[in-house]
Image 1: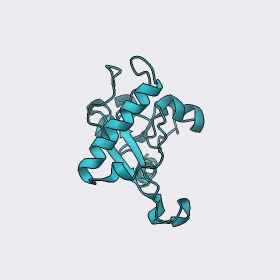
Image 2 (image 1 turned 60 degrees about the vertical axis):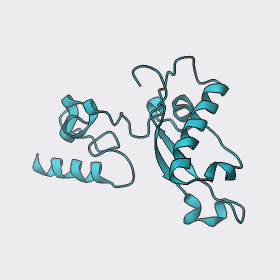
Image 3 (image 1 turned 180 degrees about the horizontal axis):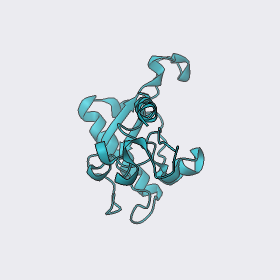
Length: 153
């Protein structure tokens, strides 16, 4: 990220929403959504069409390692850069976890040491979103842990 380069072999979060809702795709097809880690907001050279194709190729190479042949089944793809995600969904920096899952922003330092443990310098203001430990997703844990911090206050 700090070098403004995309990962050579990115880590992928993979969702297949058609498992739960087959109506999202035509019969015999699936929708597969990939969250690619780590894609810099300000990619060196910018998020050109070639850069998007390169990121898709790298992600598909990783996915092929886990699901051989999946690439030959690809009908259509859309690559959203962090700037696209920010513009379309209002997520600052285009990062669904609010901050990176990097060593300096994990565990007791998430999202930053000054506001870790859900408390902030502003009396009565607590953090309970994806930026708090243990991070985003659908676990609800940042909210539950923030509530516990409030009860202990």
